[in-house]
Image (cartoon, rainbow, N blue to C red; front, top):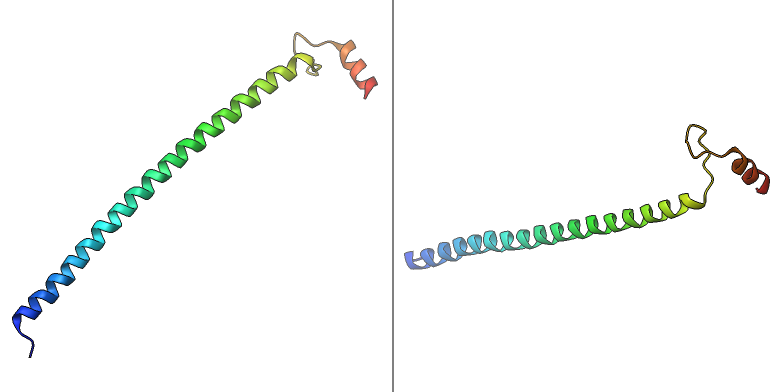
Length: 87
């Protein structure tokens, strides 16, 4: 038969292993969550930078392009016809 001291040691080891597992899982989960948040922030910053660059290119491209919307006050029919003839 097993003595009570051995049972106490067994259950103590079992419970300490369970608590260590819980603690370790929480530590890993917190590290993962912070890494995920940092990655999301970096992704947002990257998207914002791309959007700013696209906006700059769009604004620079509008100066040289011909306006094709007849409702626009800057619409010029002669430039539009010249563009169509060139293409």
